[in-house]
Image (cartoon, rainbow, N blue to C red; front, side, top):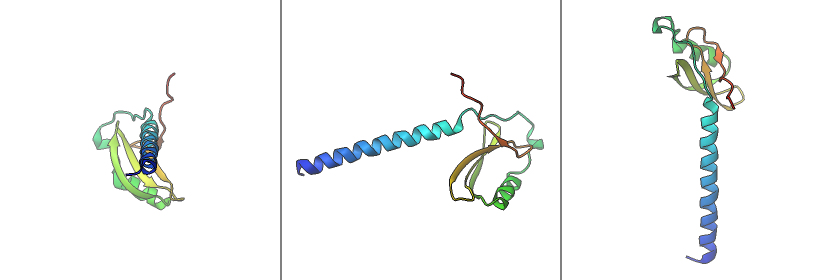
Amino acid sequence: MSASLRERLWGLRVVVSVMVCMVAATAAQAHGDVRCDAIPKTEWRPDSELRDRLVADGWQVRRIKVENGCYEVYALDKAGKKVEAFFHPKTLDPVSPAPKSK
């Protein structure tokens, strides 16, 4: 392997490593501190209702799961942009992350 090729591969490894770190940091930031009120599961509305509402708004829902007492949705919005959003399980209203304390 020539020195020039080794240098190029090293540079590529560095760039890929930096990009992976940036993506990981962005994903961690997206969560923030999102929490929903603790309510009995019997009061939760079905996630299928949330999915139907989002699809009617033009979203392409990829996954819905429960995180910190909220519905966490991974989807593409109307514009095709990736979205990670949280919704209250009783009201299905969007939930924003709590402001980060400094």
